[in-house]
Length: 281
Length: 281
Image (cartoon, rainbow over all chains, first blue to last red; front, side):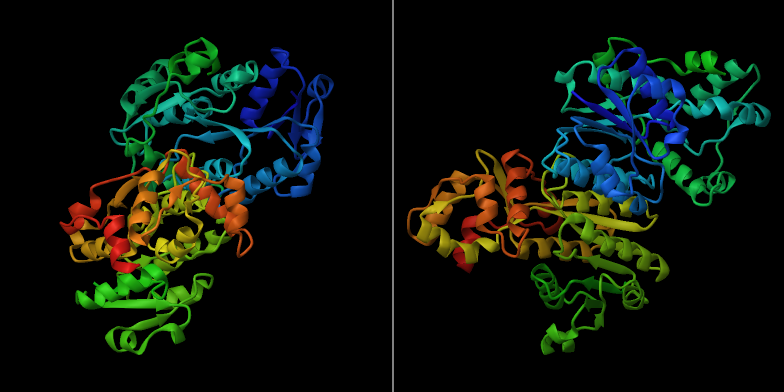
Protein backbone atom coordinates (compact mmCIF):
# COMPACT_ATOMS: atom_id res chain seq x y z
CA UNK A 1 0.00 0.00 0.00
CA UNK A 2 1.47 3.34 -1.16
CA UNK A 3 0.83 6.02 1.47
CA UNK A 4 1.03 9.80 1.05
CA UNK A 5 0.83 12.15 4.03
CA UNK A 6 -0.09 15.74 3.15
CA UNK A 7 0.85 18.72 5.31
CA UNK A 8 3.91 16.78 6.45
CA UNK A 9 5.99 19.83 7.41
CA UNK A 10 3.36 21.16 9.81
CA UNK A 11 3.40 20.49 13.57
CA UNK A 12 1.33 17.32 13.48
CA UNK A 13 2.70 16.22 10.11
CA UNK A 14 6.22 16.34 11.52
CA UNK A 15 5.28 14.04 14.39
CA UNK A 16 3.59 11.58 12.04
CA UNK A 17 6.47 11.60 9.56
CA UNK A 18 9.11 11.07 12.25
CA UNK A 19 7.19 8.20 13.78
CA UNK A 20 6.54 6.65 10.35
CA UNK A 21 10.30 6.70 9.66
CA UNK A 22 11.09 5.32 13.10
CA UNK A 23 8.48 2.55 12.83
CA UNK A 24 9.59 1.69 9.30
CA UNK A 25 6.12 2.18 7.83
CA UNK A 26 6.50 0.82 4.30
CA UNK A 27 5.92 2.92 1.19
CA UNK A 28 5.36 6.07 3.20
CA UNK A 29 5.76 9.29 1.23
CA UNK A 30 4.96 12.89 1.98
CA UNK A 31 3.30 15.71 0.08
CA UNK A 32 4.36 19.27 0.85
CA UNK A 33 3.71 22.70 -0.64
CA UNK A 34 7.29 23.84 -0.31
CA UNK A 35 9.95 21.18 -0.86
CA UNK A 36 12.62 23.55 0.52
CA UNK A 37 11.09 23.08 3.96
CA UNK A 38 11.92 19.36 3.88
CA UNK A 39 15.06 18.31 5.76
CA UNK A 40 17.80 16.27 4.11
CA UNK A 41 17.15 13.46 6.60
CA UNK A 42 13.59 13.18 5.40
CA UNK A 43 14.61 13.48 1.74
CA UNK A 44 16.91 10.50 2.22
CA UNK A 45 14.32 8.50 4.16
CA UNK A 46 11.24 8.92 1.98
CA UNK A 47 9.77 10.13 -1.28
CA UNK A 48 8.71 13.78 -1.29
CA UNK A 49 6.02 15.08 -3.65
CA UNK A 50 4.95 18.65 -4.22
CA UNK A 51 1.31 19.63 -3.85
CA UNK A 52 -0.80 22.67 -3.13
CA UNK A 53 -4.26 22.20 -1.54
CA UNK A 54 -5.58 25.02 -3.70
CA UNK A 55 -4.31 23.58 -6.96
CA UNK A 56 -6.37 20.59 -8.10
CA UNK A 57 -3.94 19.50 -10.76
CA UNK A 58 -0.98 19.49 -8.36
CA UNK A 59 -3.02 17.18 -6.12
CA UNK A 60 -3.93 14.85 -8.98
CA UNK A 61 -0.24 14.62 -9.90
CA UNK A 62 0.89 14.07 -6.31
CA UNK A 63 -1.75 11.35 -5.78
CA UNK A 64 -0.57 9.29 -8.76
CA UNK A 65 -0.17 5.61 -7.75
CA UNK A 66 -1.08 6.41 -4.16
CA UNK A 67 -3.45 4.01 -2.37
CA UNK A 68 -3.95 5.90 0.87
CA UNK A 69 -3.84 9.68 1.34
CA UNK A 70 -3.58 10.95 4.92
CA UNK A 71 -4.94 14.48 4.79
CA UNK A 72 -4.16 17.10 7.44
CA UNK A 73 -6.23 20.27 6.93
CA UNK A 74 -4.51 23.62 6.62
CA UNK A 75 -4.98 26.36 9.22
CA UNK A 76 -6.78 28.72 6.85
CA UNK A 77 -9.83 30.45 8.31
CA UNK A 78 -12.74 31.22 8.26
CA UNK A 79 -14.42 27.93 7.34
CA UNK A 80 -15.62 29.03 3.93
CA UNK A 81 -12.11 29.85 2.76
CA UNK A 82 -10.81 26.43 3.82
CA UNK A 83 -13.47 24.47 1.92
CA UNK A 84 -11.79 24.35 -1.50
CA UNK A 85 -9.01 22.18 -0.09
CA UNK A 86 -11.37 19.34 0.84
CA UNK A 87 -13.29 19.72 -2.43
CA UNK A 88 -9.93 19.46 -4.24
CA UNK A 89 -8.93 16.47 -2.11
CA UNK A 90 -12.05 14.54 -3.12
CA UNK A 91 -11.79 15.64 -6.74
CA UNK A 92 -8.13 14.63 -7.03
CA UNK A 93 -8.60 11.34 -5.16
CA UNK A 94 -11.29 10.32 -7.66
CA UNK A 95 -9.27 11.32 -10.73
CA UNK A 96 -6.11 9.64 -9.42
CA UNK A 97 -7.98 6.51 -8.28
CA UNK A 98 -6.84 6.83 -4.67
CA UNK A 99 -8.36 3.93 -2.80
CA UNK A 100 -8.68 5.43 0.67
CA UNK A 101 -8.53 8.81 2.41
CA UNK A 102 -7.67 9.24 6.07
CA UNK A 103 -8.91 12.66 7.12
CA UNK A 104 -7.57 14.25 10.29
CA UNK A 105 -10.48 16.17 11.78
CA UNK A 106 -11.17 17.87 15.08
CA UNK A 107 -13.61 17.17 17.90
CA UNK A 108 -15.18 20.65 17.99
CA UNK A 109 -17.61 19.69 15.25
CA UNK A 110 -20.99 18.98 16.84
CA UNK A 111 -24.11 20.52 15.30
CA UNK A 112 -24.25 23.26 17.96
CA UNK A 113 -20.50 23.87 18.25
CA UNK A 114 -19.70 27.60 18.11
CA UNK A 115 -16.05 27.03 17.12
CA UNK A 116 -15.52 29.05 13.96
CA UNK A 117 -14.08 26.02 12.16
CA UNK A 118 -16.92 23.63 13.06
CA UNK A 119 -18.70 24.37 9.74
CA UNK A 120 -15.57 23.29 7.88
CA UNK A 121 -15.27 20.01 9.77
CA UNK A 122 -19.02 19.35 9.54
CA UNK A 123 -18.77 19.83 5.78
CA UNK A 124 -15.57 17.82 5.27
CA UNK A 125 -16.79 14.65 6.98
CA UNK A 126 -20.09 14.68 5.07
CA UNK A 127 -18.34 15.37 1.77
CA UNK A 128 -16.32 12.22 2.33
CA UNK A 129 -19.47 10.30 3.31
CA UNK A 130 -21.20 11.38 0.10
CA UNK A 131 -18.15 11.00 -2.15
CA UNK A 132 -18.30 7.24 -2.65
CA UNK A 133 -14.62 7.07 -1.60
CA UNK A 134 -13.36 4.80 1.18
CA UNK A 135 -12.31 6.86 4.16
CA UNK A 136 -11.21 6.87 7.78
CA UNK A 137 -12.23 9.88 9.84
CA UNK A 138 -9.99 10.69 12.81
CA UNK A 139 -11.24 13.37 15.21
CA UNK A 140 -8.56 14.80 17.48
CA UNK A 141 -9.05 16.28 20.94
CA UNK A 142 -7.27 19.55 21.84
CA UNK A 143 -3.47 19.66 21.63
CA UNK A 144 -1.47 19.87 24.85
CA UNK A 145 1.54 21.16 22.94
CA UNK A 146 0.85 24.93 22.74
CA UNK A 147 0.89 25.10 26.56
CA UNK A 148 4.64 24.53 26.56
CA UNK A 149 5.33 27.89 24.91
CA UNK A 150 2.45 29.60 26.69
CA UNK A 151 3.42 28.55 30.22
CA UNK A 152 6.03 31.28 30.88
CA UNK A 153 3.41 33.94 30.11
CA UNK A 154 0.92 32.26 32.44
CA UNK A 155 3.53 31.90 35.19
CA UNK A 156 4.32 35.60 34.97
CA UNK A 157 0.61 36.46 34.99
CA UNK A 158 -0.03 34.00 37.85
CA UNK A 159 -3.31 33.17 36.13
CA UNK A 160 -4.88 30.75 33.67
CA UNK A 161 -7.36 32.96 31.87
CA UNK A 162 -9.17 30.65 29.42
CA UNK A 163 -12.83 31.76 29.16
CA UNK A 164 -14.20 28.30 29.86
CA UNK A 165 -16.18 28.69 33.09
CA UNK A 166 -16.78 25.29 34.65
CA UNK A 167 -16.29 23.51 31.34
CA UNK A 168 -13.81 20.67 31.04
CA UNK A 169 -11.47 20.01 28.13
CA UNK A 170 -10.01 16.76 26.87
CA UNK A 171 -6.34 17.18 25.88
CA UNK A 172 -3.95 14.96 23.96
CA UNK A 173 -0.37 15.49 22.78
CA UNK A 174 0.50 15.68 19.09
CA UNK A 175 2.89 12.82 19.76
CA UNK A 176 0.01 10.63 20.91
CA UNK A 177 -2.17 11.63 17.96
CA UNK A 178 0.63 10.60 15.63
CA UNK A 179 0.99 7.36 17.60
CA UNK A 180 -2.71 6.61 17.09
CA UNK A 181 -2.44 7.30 13.36
CA UNK A 182 0.66 5.14 12.99
CA UNK A 183 -1.21 2.33 14.79
CA UNK A 184 -3.95 2.51 12.14
CA UNK A 185 -1.35 2.46 9.35
CA UNK A 186 0.27 -0.60 10.89
CA UNK A 187 -2.95 -2.62 10.69
CA UNK A 188 -5.06 -2.02 7.62
CA UNK A 189 -8.02 -3.78 9.23
CA UNK A 190 -8.37 -0.67 11.34
CA UNK A 191 -9.08 1.52 8.30
CA UNK A 192 -12.62 2.62 7.42
CA UNK A 193 -13.76 3.62 10.90
CA UNK A 194 -14.46 6.87 12.73
CA UNK A 195 -12.08 7.49 15.64
CA UNK A 196 -11.76 10.03 18.42
CA UNK A 197 -8.14 10.35 19.53
CA UNK A 198 -8.53 11.76 23.01
CA UNK A 199 -6.37 11.88 26.11
CA UNK A 200 -7.34 13.08 29.56
CA UNK A 201 -10.07 15.48 30.64
CA UNK A 202 -9.38 18.44 32.96
CA UNK A 203 -11.33 21.24 34.56
CA UNK A 204 -9.47 24.53 34.28
CA UNK A 205 -8.88 24.46 38.06
CA UNK A 206 -7.20 21.08 37.65
CA UNK A 207 -5.19 22.37 34.71
CA UNK A 208 -4.11 25.46 36.68
CA UNK A 209 -2.89 23.20 39.47
CA UNK A 210 -0.85 21.09 37.03
CA UNK A 211 0.62 24.22 35.44
CA UNK A 212 1.53 25.52 38.92
CA UNK A 213 3.36 22.30 39.74
CA UNK A 214 5.32 22.34 36.51
CA UNK A 215 6.13 26.06 36.56
CA UNK A 216 6.98 25.97 40.26
CA UNK A 217 4.87 29.03 40.97
CA UNK A 218 1.17 29.56 41.74
CA UNK A 219 -1.13 29.83 38.72
CA UNK A 220 -4.82 30.33 39.57
CA UNK A 221 -7.74 29.79 37.26
CA UNK A 222 -9.16 33.25 36.76
CA UNK A 223 -11.07 33.35 33.46
CA UNK A 224 -11.44 36.52 31.41
CA UNK A 225 -14.46 37.14 29.21
CA UNK A 226 -14.63 35.61 25.72
CA UNK A 227 -14.47 39.10 24.28
CA UNK A 228 -11.37 40.07 26.28
CA UNK A 229 -9.66 36.81 25.41
CA UNK A 230 -10.42 37.29 21.72
CA UNK A 231 -8.91 40.79 21.79
CA UNK A 232 -5.81 39.66 23.72
CA UNK A 233 -4.79 37.10 21.12
CA UNK A 234 -6.04 38.68 17.91
CA UNK A 235 -2.88 38.25 15.90
CA UNK A 236 -3.08 37.65 13.02
CA UNK A 237 -6.37 39.57 12.83
CA UNK A 238 -9.35 37.22 13.26
CA UNK A 239 -7.36 34.61 15.18
CA UNK A 240 -8.43 35.93 18.60
CA UNK A 241 -12.18 35.47 18.02
CA UNK A 242 -11.44 32.07 16.43
CA UNK A 243 -9.58 30.95 19.54
CA UNK A 244 -12.25 32.45 21.81
CA UNK A 245 -14.95 30.52 19.92
CA UNK A 246 -13.11 27.29 20.73
CA UNK A 247 -13.12 28.11 24.44
CA UNK A 248 -16.78 29.06 24.17
CA UNK A 249 -17.37 25.49 22.93
CA UNK A 250 -15.48 24.27 26.01
CA UNK A 251 -17.62 26.44 28.30
CA UNK A 252 -20.69 24.72 26.80
CA UNK A 253 -19.24 21.32 27.73
CA UNK A 254 -18.69 20.42 24.07
CA UNK A 255 -14.97 19.62 24.43
CA UNK A 256 -15.46 17.17 27.28
CA UNK A 257 -15.31 14.27 24.86
CA UNK A 258 -13.47 11.06 25.52
CA UNK A 259 -13.20 7.68 23.84
CA UNK A 260 -11.03 4.64 24.42
CA UNK A 261 -9.90 4.65 20.77
CA UNK A 262 -6.31 5.62 21.63
CA UNK A 263 -5.96 2.71 24.06
CA UNK A 264 -7.63 0.28 21.65
CA UNK A 265 -5.39 1.33 18.76
CA UNK A 266 -2.06 1.56 20.55
CA UNK A 267 -2.46 -0.70 23.58
CA UNK A 268 -1.07 2.19 25.66
CA UNK A 269 -2.49 4.92 27.88
CA UNK A 270 -2.31 8.46 26.50
CA UNK A 271 0.18 10.74 28.21
CA UNK A 272 -1.13 12.87 31.10
CA UNK A 273 -0.82 16.65 30.86
CA UNK A 274 1.52 16.72 33.85
CA UNK A 275 3.86 14.15 32.35
CA UNK A 276 3.79 15.85 28.96
CA UNK A 277 4.74 19.23 30.45
CA UNK A 278 7.42 17.74 32.67
CA UNK A 279 9.00 16.14 29.61
CA UNK A 280 8.70 19.14 27.32
CA UNK A 281 8.80 22.31 29.44
CA UNK B 1 -42.10 40.90 15.73
CA UNK B 2 -41.57 41.50 12.00
CA UNK B 3 -41.26 38.18 10.17
CA UNK B 4 -39.85 37.54 6.69
CA UNK B 5 -40.19 34.15 4.99
CA UNK B 6 -37.75 33.58 2.15
CA UNK B 7 -38.41 31.15 -0.70
CA UNK B 8 -42.12 31.79 -0.25
CA UNK B 9 -43.15 30.83 -3.79
CA UNK B 10 -41.59 27.36 -3.54
CA UNK B 11 -43.57 24.24 -2.59
CA UNK B 12 -42.98 24.47 1.15
CA UNK B 13 -42.99 28.28 1.17
CA UNK B 14 -46.45 28.27 -0.40
CA UNK B 15 -47.80 26.03 2.38
CA UNK B 16 -46.24 28.21 5.08
CA UNK B 17 -47.48 31.45 3.51
CA UNK B 18 -51.03 30.16 3.06
CA UNK B 19 -51.19 28.93 6.65
CA UNK B 20 -49.70 32.18 7.96
CA UNK B 21 -52.43 34.14 6.15
CA UNK B 22 -55.14 31.77 7.38
CA UNK B 23 -53.87 31.86 10.98
CA UNK B 24 -53.49 35.64 10.89
CA UNK B 25 -49.81 35.55 11.85
CA UNK B 26 -49.04 39.21 12.53
CA UNK B 27 -46.41 41.15 10.60
CA UNK B 28 -45.71 38.27 8.27
CA UNK B 29 -44.00 39.26 5.02
CA UNK B 30 -42.37 37.26 2.26
CA UNK B 31 -39.13 37.53 0.33
CA UNK B 32 -39.06 36.24 -3.24
CA UNK B 33 -36.62 36.32 -6.13
CA UNK B 34 -39.29 37.01 -8.74
CA UNK B 35 -42.16 39.22 -7.65
CA UNK B 36 -44.09 38.29 -10.80
CA UNK B 37 -44.57 34.81 -9.33
CA UNK B 38 -46.56 36.24 -6.41
CA UNK B 39 -50.36 35.99 -6.71
CA UNK B 40 -52.59 39.05 -6.29
CA UNK B 41 -54.21 37.40 -3.26
CA UNK B 42 -50.84 37.26 -1.53
CA UNK B 43 -49.91 40.79 -2.62
CA UNK B 44 -53.09 42.05 -0.97
CA UNK B 45 -52.59 39.97 2.17
CA UNK B 46 -48.94 40.68 2.96
CA UNK B 47 -45.83 42.67 2.22
CA UNK B 48 -43.64 41.26 -0.54
CA UNK B 49 -39.91 42.01 -0.73
CA UNK B 50 -37.49 41.11 -3.48
CA UNK B 51 -34.34 39.19 -2.66
CA UNK B 52 -31.84 36.91 -4.33
CA UNK B 53 -29.89 34.39 -2.21
CA UNK B 54 -26.83 35.00 -4.33
CA UNK B 55 -26.91 38.78 -3.98
CA UNK B 56 -25.80 39.88 -0.50
CA UNK B 57 -26.98 43.46 -0.89
CA UNK B 58 -30.47 42.40 -1.96
CA UNK B 59 -30.66 40.33 1.22
CA UNK B 60 -29.47 43.20 3.42
CA UNK B 61 -32.16 45.43 1.88
CA UNK B 62 -34.90 42.79 2.22
CA UNK B 63 -33.96 42.15 5.88
CA UNK B 64 -34.35 45.83 6.87
CA UNK B 65 -36.45 46.11 10.07
CA UNK B 66 -37.02 42.36 10.12
CA UNK B 67 -36.76 40.60 13.51
CA UNK B 68 -37.13 37.00 12.37
CA UNK B 69 -36.06 35.55 9.02
CA UNK B 70 -37.42 32.11 8.13
CA UNK B 71 -34.97 30.72 5.60
CA UNK B 72 -35.86 27.92 3.19
CA UNK B 73 -32.78 26.71 1.27
CA UNK B 74 -32.84 26.64 -2.51
CA UNK B 75 -32.65 23.40 -4.47
CA UNK B 76 -29.25 24.17 -6.00
CA UNK B 77 -26.78 21.29 -6.01
CA UNK B 78 -24.13 20.03 -5.38
CA UNK B 79 -23.52 21.18 -1.80
CA UNK B 80 -20.61 23.46 -2.60
CA UNK B 81 -22.66 25.53 -5.02
CA UNK B 82 -25.41 26.05 -2.47
CA UNK B 83 -23.11 27.32 0.30
CA UNK B 84 -22.98 31.00 -0.72
CA UNK B 85 -26.68 31.39 0.10
CA UNK B 86 -26.20 30.50 3.78
CA UNK B 87 -23.03 32.60 3.96
CA UNK B 88 -25.04 35.49 2.50
CA UNK B 89 -27.89 34.82 4.92
CA UNK B 90 -25.59 35.14 7.94
CA UNK B 91 -23.77 38.14 6.47
CA UNK B 92 -27.00 40.01 5.69
CA UNK B 93 -28.65 39.13 9.01
CA UNK B 94 -25.70 40.65 10.88
CA UNK B 95 -25.60 43.84 8.78
CA UNK B 96 -29.38 44.28 8.97
CA UNK B 97 -29.51 43.50 12.71
CA UNK B 98 -31.93 40.62 12.27
CA UNK B 99 -32.59 39.23 15.74
CA UNK B 100 -33.34 35.61 14.90
CA UNK B 101 -33.03 33.15 12.01
CA UNK B 102 -35.22 30.09 11.61
CA UNK B 103 -33.44 27.74 9.23
CA UNK B 104 -35.38 24.95 7.54
CA UNK B 105 -32.99 22.02 7.32
CA UNK B 106 -33.30 18.37 6.44
CA UNK B 107 -32.85 15.19 8.44
CA UNK B 108 -30.32 13.54 6.08
CA UNK B 109 -27.46 15.38 7.74
CA UNK B 110 -25.67 12.93 10.06
CA UNK B 111 -21.88 12.72 9.93
CA UNK B 112 -21.98 9.53 7.85
CA UNK B 113 -24.94 10.46 5.65
CA UNK B 114 -24.17 9.80 1.96
CA UNK B 115 -26.90 12.17 0.71
CA UNK B 116 -25.18 14.58 -1.64
CA UNK B 117 -26.64 17.57 0.23
CA UNK B 118 -25.60 16.42 3.71
CA UNK B 119 -22.39 18.52 3.52
CA UNK B 120 -24.50 21.62 2.89
CA UNK B 121 -26.79 20.97 5.85
CA UNK B 122 -23.87 20.02 8.11
CA UNK B 123 -22.21 23.29 7.20
CA UNK B 124 -25.29 25.48 7.47
CA UNK B 125 -26.23 24.43 11.01
CA UNK B 126 -22.67 24.93 12.27
CA UNK B 127 -22.36 28.28 10.53
CA UNK B 128 -25.40 29.43 12.47
CA UNK B 129 -23.97 27.96 15.70
CA UNK B 130 -20.73 29.86 15.19
CA UNK B 131 -22.33 33.09 13.93
CA UNK B 132 -23.35 34.55 17.27
CA UNK B 133 -26.89 35.00 15.88
CA UNK B 134 -29.98 33.64 17.61
CA UNK B 135 -31.45 30.79 15.62
CA UNK B 136 -33.96 27.96 15.48
CA UNK B 137 -32.97 24.90 13.49
CA UNK B 138 -35.84 22.86 12.05
CA UNK B 139 -34.92 19.52 10.48
CA UNK B 140 -37.60 18.06 8.22
CA UNK B 141 -38.24 14.40 7.48
CA UNK B 142 -38.90 13.31 3.88
CA UNK B 143 -41.86 14.84 2.06
CA UNK B 144 -44.87 12.65 1.30
CA UNK B 145 -46.02 15.07 -1.40
CA UNK B 146 -44.00 13.93 -4.45
CA UNK B 147 -45.67 10.51 -4.24
CA UNK B 148 -48.96 12.02 -5.42
CA UNK B 149 -47.56 12.78 -8.88
CA UNK B 150 -45.37 9.65 -8.91
CA UNK B 151 -48.14 7.18 -8.06
CA UNK B 152 -49.58 6.78 -11.61
CA UNK B 153 -46.12 5.75 -12.86
CA UNK B 154 -45.76 3.26 -10.01
CA UNK B 155 -49.25 1.86 -10.58
CA UNK B 156 -48.47 1.29 -14.26
CA UNK B 157 -45.14 -0.30 -13.34
CA UNK B 158 -46.78 -2.38 -10.59
CA UNK B 159 -43.63 -1.81 -8.55
CA UNK B 160 -42.13 0.49 -5.95
CA UNK B 161 -38.47 0.57 -6.98
CA UNK B 162 -36.75 2.72 -4.33
CA UNK B 163 -33.24 1.33 -3.72
CA UNK B 164 -33.69 1.18 0.04
CA UNK B 165 -33.38 -2.51 0.92
CA UNK B 166 -34.84 -3.14 4.36
CA UNK B 167 -34.39 0.48 5.39
CA UNK B 168 -37.31 2.47 6.76
CA UNK B 169 -38.14 6.08 6.00
CA UNK B 170 -39.95 8.65 8.10
CA UNK B 171 -42.33 10.73 5.98
CA UNK B 172 -44.24 13.93 6.68
CA UNK B 173 -46.43 16.13 4.47
CA UNK B 174 -45.42 19.67 3.55
CA UNK B 175 -48.71 20.75 5.08
CA UNK B 176 -47.66 19.32 8.44
CA UNK B 177 -44.20 20.85 8.24
CA UNK B 178 -45.81 24.24 7.65
CA UNK B 179 -48.15 23.54 10.57
CA UNK B 180 -45.18 22.87 12.86
CA UNK B 181 -43.46 26.07 11.73
CA UNK B 182 -46.62 28.14 12.21
CA UNK B 183 -46.93 26.68 15.74
CA UNK B 184 -43.43 27.98 16.54
CA UNK B 185 -44.31 31.42 15.13
CA UNK B 186 -47.42 31.49 17.29
CA UNK B 187 -45.45 31.09 20.50
CA UNK B 188 -42.12 32.86 20.59
CA UNK B 189 -41.05 30.87 23.66
CA UNK B 190 -40.59 27.99 21.25
CA UNK B 191 -37.86 29.81 19.32
CA UNK B 192 -34.18 29.00 19.85
CA UNK B 193 -34.44 25.21 19.82
CA UNK B 194 -33.55 22.40 17.45
CA UNK B 195 -36.55 20.51 16.11
CA UNK B 196 -37.15 17.43 14.00
CA UNK B 197 -40.49 17.66 12.21
CA UNK B 198 -41.22 14.03 11.48
CA UNK B 199 -44.32 12.03 10.72
CA UNK B 200 -44.67 8.27 10.43
CA UNK B 201 -42.05 5.63 9.64
CA UNK B 202 -42.58 3.00 6.95
CA UNK B 203 -40.71 0.08 5.49
CA UNK B 204 -40.89 0.05 1.70
CA UNK B 205 -43.10 -3.05 1.88
CA UNK B 206 -45.52 -1.12 4.09
CA UNK B 207 -45.37 1.85 1.74
CA UNK B 208 -46.02 -0.37 -1.30
CA UNK B 209 -49.07 -1.77 0.45
CA UNK B 210 -50.41 1.74 1.16
CA UNK B 211 -49.76 2.77 -2.44
CA UNK B 212 -51.60 -0.36 -3.66
CA UNK B 213 -54.63 0.52 -1.53
CA UNK B 214 -54.76 4.08 -2.78
CA UNK B 215 -54.09 3.26 -6.45
CA UNK B 216 -56.50 0.32 -6.38
CA UNK B 217 -53.98 -1.97 -8.06
CA UNK B 218 -51.13 -4.11 -6.80
CA UNK B 219 -47.78 -2.36 -6.31
CA UNK B 220 -44.98 -4.59 -5.01
CA UNK B 221 -41.77 -3.45 -3.44
CA UNK B 222 -39.12 -4.52 -5.94
CA UNK B 223 -36.04 -2.33 -5.48
CA UNK B 224 -33.67 -1.53 -8.35
CA UNK B 225 -29.98 -0.85 -7.75
CA UNK B 226 -28.82 2.61 -6.67
CA UNK B 227 -27.06 2.96 -9.99
CA UNK B 228 -30.13 2.03 -12.04
CA UNK B 229 -32.32 4.36 -9.99
CA UNK B 230 -29.86 7.22 -10.47
CA UNK B 231 -29.87 6.70 -14.23
CA UNK B 232 -33.66 6.44 -14.44
CA UNK B 233 -34.25 9.85 -12.89
CA UNK B 234 -31.21 11.79 -14.05
CA UNK B 235 -33.04 14.85 -15.30
CA UNK B 236 -31.81 17.51 -14.97
CA UNK B 237 -28.33 15.93 -15.20
CA UNK B 238 -26.96 15.13 -11.74
CA UNK B 239 -30.39 14.89 -10.12
CA UNK B 240 -30.58 11.09 -10.46
CA UNK B 241 -27.42 10.38 -8.43
CA UNK B 242 -28.54 13.03 -5.90
CA UNK B 243 -31.87 11.26 -5.43
CA UNK B 244 -30.16 7.85 -5.33
CA UNK B 245 -27.81 9.10 -2.61
CA UNK B 246 -30.84 9.97 -0.47
CA UNK B 247 -32.21 6.43 -0.82
CA UNK B 248 -28.76 5.08 -0.04
CA UNK B 249 -29.02 6.98 3.27
CA UNK B 250 -32.37 5.28 3.82
CA UNK B 251 -30.87 1.86 3.08
CA UNK B 252 -28.32 2.56 5.84
CA UNK B 253 -31.16 3.24 8.30
CA UNK B 254 -30.27 6.94 8.47
CA UNK B 255 -33.75 8.19 7.55
CA UNK B 256 -35.54 6.19 10.22
CA UNK B 257 -35.61 9.21 12.49
CA UNK B 258 -38.57 10.23 14.57
CA UNK B 259 -39.26 12.76 17.30
CA UNK B 260 -42.39 13.91 19.09
CA UNK B 261 -41.68 17.55 18.19
CA UNK B 262 -44.63 17.81 15.81
CA UNK B 263 -47.06 16.61 18.48
CA UNK B 264 -45.51 18.85 21.14
CA UNK B 265 -45.64 21.92 18.92
CA UNK B 266 -49.08 21.46 17.40
CA UNK B 267 -50.96 19.28 19.91
CA UNK B 268 -51.95 17.12 16.91
CA UNK B 269 -50.82 13.87 15.34
CA UNK B 270 -49.05 14.12 11.97
CA UNK B 271 -51.02 12.88 9.01
CA UNK B 272 -50.49 9.23 7.99
CA UNK B 273 -49.26 8.49 4.47
CA UNK B 274 -52.49 6.65 3.66
CA UNK B 275 -54.66 9.56 4.76
CA UNK B 276 -52.47 12.05 2.93
CA UNK B 277 -52.69 10.12 -0.36
CA UNK B 278 -56.43 9.53 -0.02
CA UNK B 279 -56.93 13.29 0.39
CA UNK B 280 -54.57 14.35 -2.38
CA UNK B 281 -54.42 11.61 -5.03
